[in-house]
Length: 373
Image 1 (tube, rainbow, N blue to C red):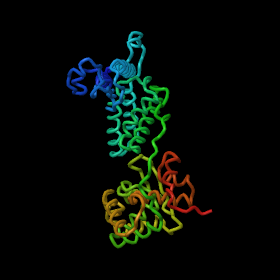
Image 2 (image 1 turned 135 degrees about the vertical axis):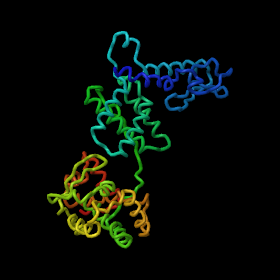
Image 3 (image 1 turned 180 degrees about the vertical axis):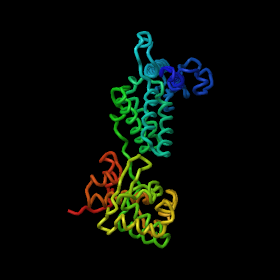
Image 4 (image 1 turned 90 degrees about the vertical axis):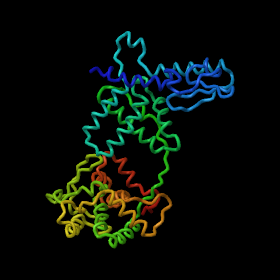
């Protein structure tokens, strides 16, 4: 089926976005003497006129002059309409116009090939739905930096800057995938400036790790070793929980990360010299208590691992200025320790990052660690 017709359902949604359907369907406002002769999206608030952006619901004051308000509203509606549909001239000339919904279809095919984790796919699908509802049937050529930034501002409402940045990254991924497929020529999302966010989660320091580790030993023998396994391998809770004894062969621990699909082989002699902690020793100790189970951690789930860490952390009596570090912060601590001993390239490979910039974020102690010079 022609993709143009596949996008028709998305185009119907544009009527609501641009405010060109009947007012009773779009806004539910009642007709009265104040609104009867006003164009869509223009409101009379006690003699003061305001225009509501149908895409975001945000209102803009225009003033008390009705003539000016009506003209401004009509101009805004026409501008929205011009960006939200295929022009008559393009249709008459038979010009091929790529709609944004085609980029979504293309991106869905791409992420299916990436074999992402169930949770990551769920997050992508939720966000793709929201993006599709906003841009779905809009011609790609009509989506520029301004249009993308307007969408991101809506997502950032209520100081949700981190969420807005996640949408920005996803949009950029969509456009880059489209460029590689010949469906787009540029990525307007990457040209927008990221929202500045305040990191609230505290990093975990080595002394704090060791104190929590002592409590974990008393709490549950398996969990103390789980912390060691996380520290020496730098892997996430879900990947730790999934590790099997059969994954150990040829002197290496084979890991296929659930989140990214990265495939890593970690040498058993891998060591954190500062703690005299070696992967082979950790595995030997786990074998003594979980050797009869097919999994290294005896079938414990990622949720159980995270919960056990919270108990040990809260029992320690340690305090942090920001949010207390979760179990995942052991991964950052692992990255910093390995980086100090073996360099950033080793750490990037161990953590399974595609880019060094992501590894740099993990290596950042967020001002909690002293630099020796």
